[in-house]
Image (cartoon, rainbow, N blue to C red; front, side, top):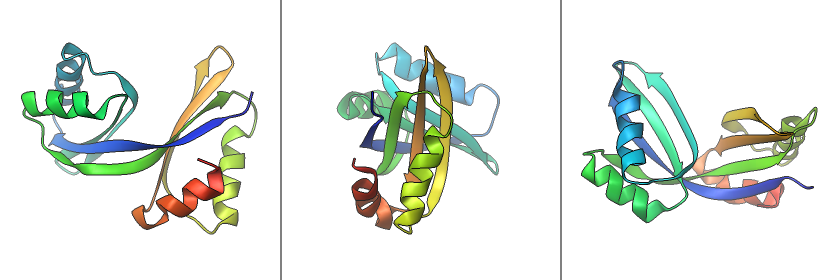
Length: 136
C-alpha cells in the first residue's frame, strides 16, 4: 500500500506554559466531540504553542471559541500515513530536498499494526511547491 500524503489545515493556539493547560484544552475539544487527525504541542518561552489538525475545521472553530481559545489563523501542513518501514520518512525528506524545499518541522511516529504517521510543516511560501513534490 502506498503512503497517503495530503495537505491539511491546521490551527495554532497559544496557551500559558503551565502544567495542565494542554490537558484542559484537549479536554474542552474532546467534550465538544472534536476529532483530531494530528496534534503537536511545545513550549515557547512562557507560553506553549498547540497545533491542531482537526477532522472537521468548523467543529474545531466552534469548540475553540466556546473554550475561549484564540486561534492564530488557519495554516497548511501535511499529514502523512502509511505502512511502517525503514526509511519511510527519509523518502519524503529526499523528495523535498530534491525540490529545494526546507522542512520547518516534522513529527513522525510508529502507530502500531505496521503503520506510521507524520505531520510535516514547510514555510508557507513553499506549501504549493511541496504539495507538488509530494504528490499531495
